[in-house]
Every structure is written in C-alpha cells, then in structure tokens.
Amino acid sequence: MRKYVLPLLLFTVFSAVGVTLWLTKDNLFYLFNFGYIGGAIALGLVLFIKKYRHARRVTQLLVGGYMLVYLGLICRENMQLEGFFYYLFTGVFEAATIHYAVAKILGPLLFGRGWCGYACWTAAVLDLLPYKTPQSPRKKLGFLRYIMFSASLLFVSALFLAHVGNLEKIMFAAFIFGNVLYYASGVILAFVMRDNRAFCKYLCPVTVFLKPMSYFSLLRVSCDKSRCVECGKCRKICPMNVDMTDNSRRRENGTECILCMECVKVCPKNALGHGSGKEKTAR
Ligand code: SF4
Ligand code: SF4
Ligand code: SF4
Image 1 (cartoon, helix red, strand yellow):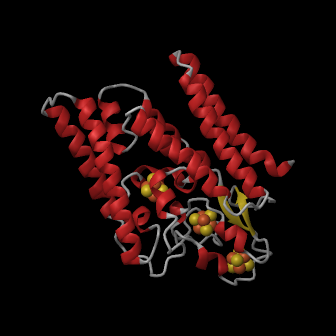
Image 2 (spheres, protein in one colour):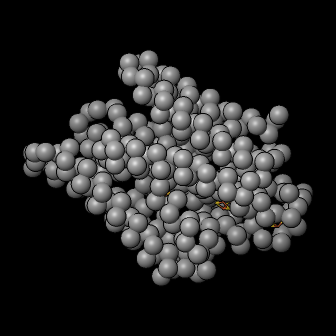
Image 3 (cartoon, protein in one colour):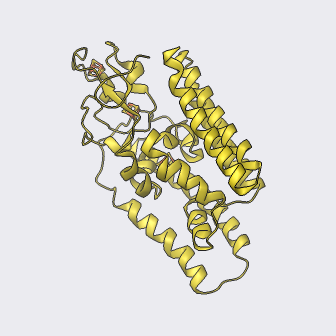
C-alpha cells in the first residue's frame, strides 16, 4: 500500500483546495474542478505504478484537455499568462489567478513541475512529436523566456493603461491567438532543434514562475548512489537534460525536471525514484 501514498496525498491536497474554495467562495464549481484534476493526477500515478506505458498521457489528456476545451474554449476563460495578469489587475481571485497560484506558483513547492509533465495542454501535443529525447545539445537561449514574459505583461498593462473596452472579448481572442502561437512555435522549434521540449526550455514564459519555485520542490527524483553503476542511461533519455544522479538542489538543470519518470523506468539498477533528495522511495 505504501506505493499508493503519493497519488492519495496529491488527491487529498487537491480535494482540500477544492473544499476550501467551495466553502470560502460559496461556489460548488471549485469542488468539482479540483476534485476532477486531483482525481486525474492520482489516476495517472496509479497507472504508472501499475506500469501502464501511457499513464502520463492519460493525465495530460484528462487535465490539459479539460482546461483547454472546457475552461478555455467553452467557459471562455483565458487560462494563459495574459489571463493571470488580467485577473490579477482586476483584483479577482478566480479562474487563471487560482490556476496559477495552485499549479504554477505555490504547488511547485510540493510537486515541482508536475504541471509540465502531466497537465500542460501545449506539451501534451509537443510530446507526440518524434524527438522525445533531445537530439542536439542544450542551447543558451533561456533568456528568451523573459522576453516572452515581459511581452505578455506589457500587453495586458497596455490594455488597462489605455482603458480599452470589451476586455473580456479581447482576452478571449488573446487566448486563442496565444495558443495558436505557442503550438506553432513549439512545433517549429521541436523540428528545428530536434527536441520536443525546446519550447519549454527556451520560450515558455510560465517557467519564470515554475523554475524558482520548483527549486524547493518536496517531490523530486533522487538517486540511490549505492546502486548506481554510472551507466548514464538516465541522463541520456531525459527530455529536459537534468542530471538526476546528483542529489543536490543545484544539480544541472534541476529546475527543469517535469517528473516524467522516464529516467526511473530506464534505470537497470532500480537506483532512481521519487523522494526528498536524500533517499529514494520504493516504487
Ligand atoms: S514549460 Fe510551459 S509549455 Fe512547457 S509544459 Fe511547462 S507550462 Fe507547458
Ligand atoms: S540509469 Fe541508473 S545505474 Fe545508470 S547512471 Fe542512471 S541511476 Fe545510475
Ligand atoms: S527523465 Fe527524470 S530527471 Fe528527466 S525530466 Fe523526467 S523525471 Fe525529471
């Protein structure tokens, strides 16, 4: 039963957030929303424990699809970074502000960049492309994410400063345009750099939040050094170029780990697992 602690813990955390928001905001939607997301994440983890090959894809599809299609396209809520700034500026703690607080600002202290591995609807498509393992060395282009972040902030600030009307409509159009832009640039970058996750590494502005918060993540891949034979298979398969054999917080590309567990699956000595960083947890 010990191996099911993590899915149970995450389901409990998400349900607790849902109940808290339901009672404080008097809106039953939050209970459904967070119960659904927590349930989808727990299901993916249980399937992973049961060694189902497409476990992560199941969660990506359930959570990413729900957020893009239901919350974004049907409920017309801008769940991208511009939506976060928009709701923040209007002083409303709803939709994108709650989403960002839970998945991208506070949540990463607990589950790192689990969002990037299990829920992001952009990456759900990029992960289907041919270059699951990077075919070229990592480039020093991370500064581009700050340009993207600033452009997003400037765009929303300009709308408010210019007192533009019909902001709800503009934000919905921005959501559609933003997603088309992300998908197009993500696919082009993947083929040019022969790396499915190139967009995540260089362009995605959300990483401005995700990276510093996930540095402190409680949940992370750790290595049992007494079992490791330095074969290097784990580093070779990692889509994010992380050195997971180094247990320190400062390990190479440590804040890039998306918890996909590909390294854990490939290790011939069962030396990798999720843990606090000092010990590996049995899987
Ligand atoms: S880095 Fe950005 S695009 Fe990539 S998975 Fe994370 S949030 Fe999605
Ligand atoms: S795959 Fe396992 S044994 Fe090989 S280097 Fe990685 S942790 Fe060590
Ligand atoms: S392969 Fe391992 S270290 Fe690399 S992103 Fe996936 S879980 Fe993290």
